[in-house]
Length: 133
Image (cartoon, rainbow, N blue to C red):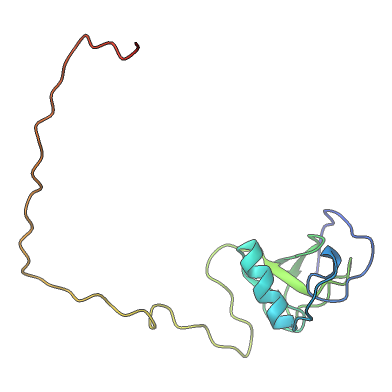
């Protein structure tokens, strides 16, 4: 594993998002990853999941090239990682990819529909008009 340090925190965290202040609720690692994903707009995973790729700690941005099970961040202790790679969302080992488009109903297709042209007034072009008062 290799990584670079972008910034540091004041100390180790206690789990998902704990360095940002006290939270009213305790989150499971999966819930913390979902919450981080909604906030960041990037696929997020938690320590213990086996998923390869380039990841950044959501707290301190420490980066790793992961080839096995995601660890806790070695810099700050955070357990939530954002996937930094391009392409499709990686699927952790032992999980199945969510169905794409299977839940959305398809619109009915009509093949012999006549499309009418929209009726528009002709455009008038006038020269020498002053737009300022």
